[in-house]
Length: 404
Image (cartoon, helix red, strand yellow):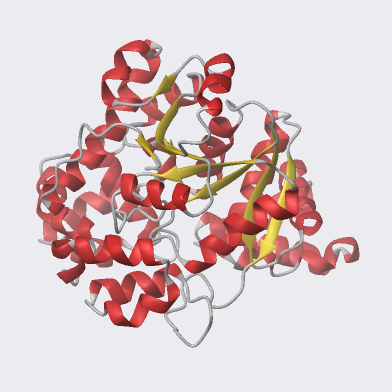
């Protein structure tokens, strides 16, 4: 079994994603496509537009052989930790020969060159990074500026200038770095993104961004997106009446709950949550005490250093009680595979998985069979789904693996 792995969110699954699924299989020559997909919440700290079971079953119907969940604790992490969790999950599969991802660059060698530079981090680059951090930039922005300046001073690296200005390049570099650090023998396959950029709201292209498509969905303008998504995705969206009609992100429905929880905390309490550092705990506490909605809180707390995406993630950490200690325990724990959907023709993958990974789940009740250190993480994944079920008035908390 020759396998290519894809790390994805499919939020929602678009024609561009189908193009990638097809290209990954054909261009790598692999006979198995494994998708590691974010579940109920995604990397920018937002709720997924549709539930994970619908997205996973559609992905299998349109080309994947199996879709497994990226554990929530990694799915709502900064890029490097998101990548670490995804690669850790992929490494639990046997015979993974390639990882495939889309990038603005489309050049695996160039992205690998940046990854190696960031891992080695020469003193000159490190000093540049520290300088930009002291100027108040967020870590991703400071790193991008430092790499660009370093590339301008070192002609051997001139070709990498500007690569860290694009989100899919950043994630691709993070995947490559995680593979190198883990010592895995996995080849890199990337295809150049076509059409709109990640955050572009334009529809004047063959492949508009998922951001643009989500915006149209929340405005109830489904006719606008019909030609840009597979029929299966469009059908899912039509069925999600409450979600489609809403003009807001489902996470905003949790605004009162998040604000209530934050108002009841001290700055010291907040300090224990994952990715809270540098006085950010007191800034969030002050914002929570003077605002009444999540949007107001984000606007009050954001700065050049503290981005809205980071703040949204921290709000989820507080909601789900994801502490620094919980993340550290997750890193120490073995990988687990939570299967969301699988092709009826590829049940051989299950047999292979049972030999390579001792912690495989196909339903919630399997939580009692995995290592004890993993049970909190698995329950967290299902609580996240249950939270969205409440918002969407659905009942999918106890859903099991879907065979397509």
